[in-house]
Image (tube, rainbow, N blue to C red; front, side):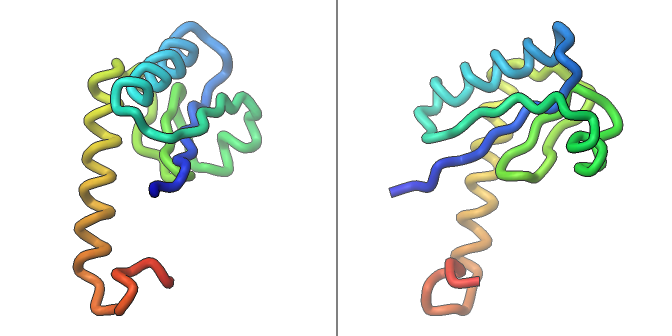
Amino acid sequence: MSETRIISVYGSGCKNCHTLFDNAQKAVAELGIDAQLEYVTDIVEISTKGIMATPALAFDGKVVSMGKALDANAIAKLLLQEKSAAADNASDSSCCCGGNCC
């Protein structure tokens, strides 16, 4: 069973920000990922994440793109790359739980 992913789009509410949000929804649907999408417009929260250009995209709090309205295919590719990297890190662990305890 997989955990629900938090996918965040940060932006001011402009057309590009809405496009990124829509494309993130499409990517999640195409991949069949259990995800909660959120659209963050609070400038204080955006700045505390270190985002200097919007729209920005984050997976589980980690900013993965800034200043681009990525298409659904690019977002899906990022999601798959991150999933693959997380699996590699878990398999590299010398811990008995595969890296899930820390």
